Amino acid sequence: MKLKTLDNIDLEGKKILLRCDLNVPFDLDGKVSDSTKIERHKITIDELIHKGAKIIIMSHLGRPNGKYKDSLSISKVLGKFAEKIKVPQVTVMPFCKPDILKKVVRDLNNGTITFMENIRFHPEEEKNDENFAKQLAECGDYYVNDAFSVSHRKHVSTYGLSKFLPTFVGRYLEVEIKMLDKIFNNLNKPVMAIVGGSKISTKIVLLNNLLKKVDKLVVGGAMANTFLAAKGYKTGKSLIEKDKISIAEEILEKADQENCKLILPEDVVVAKSIDDLESVDNVKVDKIEENFSAFDIGESTIEKISNEMAACKTIFWNGPLGLYEKEPFDNSTNIIGRTAAILTKSNIITSVVGGGDTVAALNKEKLTGGFSFVSIAGGALVEWLEGKILPGLEFLHKS
Figure 1 (tube, helix red, strand yellow):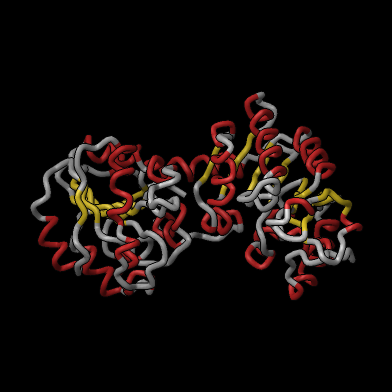
Figure 2 (cartoon, one colour):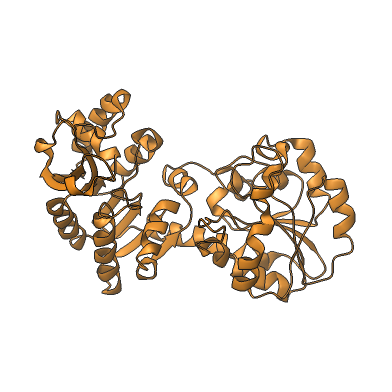
């Protein structure tokens, strides 16, 4: 796959429709609580400014469902954007149709940034409406995708525009693709994958695909409860997907066939509820009582994963291992994160982390700097690892 990068175009005076992912989290005071996504686009935006492009940024924020919502205005991001990208001034276009936008962008100065309002305010965006894509394309000379994290979406701003404008990858997207290709196409073995999260249903294809590629597969998070049920353990009130127990059984069988060591919790941290901290206990998986739920993997399992990890060369991690938002159920994610960071800094392993929840959990403990590569992509990374061609990258496969 040959990348069409910014090296291939003359940017001066050109109107660039730039797809970023600025869908950042906010705290209870309405302030941006994690600016990682903003910071990742700086390398692309700096170059476009330096080379005199007229930059029109497109991004979504939240799920407005095709309607204008003041609480999801892209203007909520502007203060943090200006701080992190270090630009003196950015403007946001009022929510308007592309024909109005077309008139405005004609008068933009070179090296300036203008934001479109939240692209998902337009109901046509998520429908990948071809007419909307055509109208939007008339506002630019080139389309640049810099958002790997939303490239699995077949929307106008991630896919439809590539049919009507010369299309290129931004610098951050270029870094992401090259790094993932380098790591996963030339894996140093043994390879361990750590997959957490709440539901098997969202990661069936990923798990099946990883069984063919890795030597060890750790299953954690609430998803592990369904695997424990498939092995005949009683899981109390723990979250499980009863209709996916048969799939868990198939994955367990396939792991044996593929000679992949599948590592499940041997012990778990339980409680009567997430708020009943007096009931918290560390128990073996065959000792979960009826009125208790598992919210994290236990101490023996953490030690086992850490030892198995130290014997590997490459680690891929997607999904927290416990309910990381709530102490003490963040313990396993924090300890495994610190262990992986130490092994990475010691050049024992190459480590890749992907997914918004995983990154947020590690950011909370200031651990992301200790990994070889941290991807902000969640669903897109999962689909990429499943071997799918992402809609937002299809244009790279057409020549």
